[in-house]
Length: 197
Image (cartoon, rainbow, N blue to C red):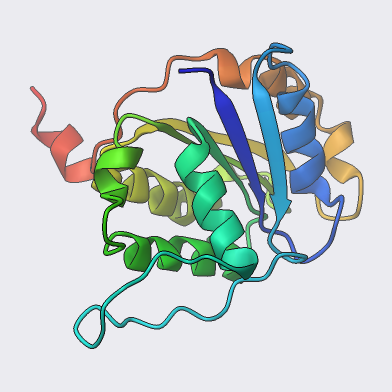
């Protein structure tokens, strides 16, 4: 299967530090790797309604929900590019991941089985120099990947607050050059990792 990267931009502003860092990492991908970029601020999803016990689910066929559904299914690699907002993913990204819950029940798709074995990555910029404050964001992405049976490539972290700040973070730019080259292991919950001898 040809690798197809879906970059899901979750910032509330365009060309922010997180997007700049994600684009630097994407520049290193081989030219035969397909890239699709979707900005959730300009392709907003409706609030997620949990209807699992109330109604039959249907495949989304129109609007931004259908676009995100189809591009997610087509991707071998999904990159969540979300700034660190209140120590986790942005509201745009959380809404996108919430929609996965509905897609799990889409007839004829088997969303979970389809996504299993594919790779989830993260990119984030944060104002703190102590990257540990991003642990909740990393945990959200890792645990989502673990539930889906996906691989998790980790999160590329960079420092930046004002527009363009991340381009001064030379360590982050260096990590970006090889970020997508690493072998992404199968995602595991932290309690599973603790059980490993």
